[in-house]
Amino acid sequence: MSGLQDLVKATDFAAIKHTDQRRSNVAKTPYINHPIGVMNILCNEGGVTDIATLMGAVLHDTVEDTETTIEEVKLAFGDEVAGIVAEVSDDKDLPKAERKRLQIVNAPHKSTKAKLVKLADKLYNLRDLTRESPVGWTEERVHEYRLWSSKVCSGLVGTNAVLESLLKAELGQHNVDYPASE
Image (cartoon, rainbow, N blue to C red; front, side):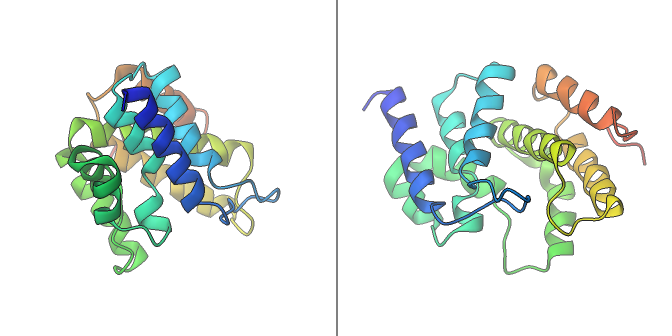
């Protein structure tokens, strides 16, 4: 298969895996919009054209948020893509606070491709919060998410200047420093 065919196959795979999922906004947006949006940010804003990275972006939540396993991703898309997905997937067996802590601690140690996916993922989520908070989120919770995202992304500094500039602008409009100040 060509790179483009692989990317379309990965997008179809993600769409099937996320079929019944919805975002937590009032409109209950189809969840697949998120991974496609992350891939779009990487490609059309961050200038990323590496097919494995784009595949990792569209597949990034399949293991974390569906019944998909890393082995299944590996069989369908190979070691490199599975590795990217594994690097950006939280261990859902851990408590939420520990998963969030580990994202901050582990961010600087990720591969460049995983860092790119993480940057675009956080940027997409932050933009989503600006458009519309998830149902049930208070302003305090939204602010805490922005602060935490800044801390995670501070471990990714030097990965992609364009995405980092966009993150800085997005967080700055909400009075959150990026990189995070301790």
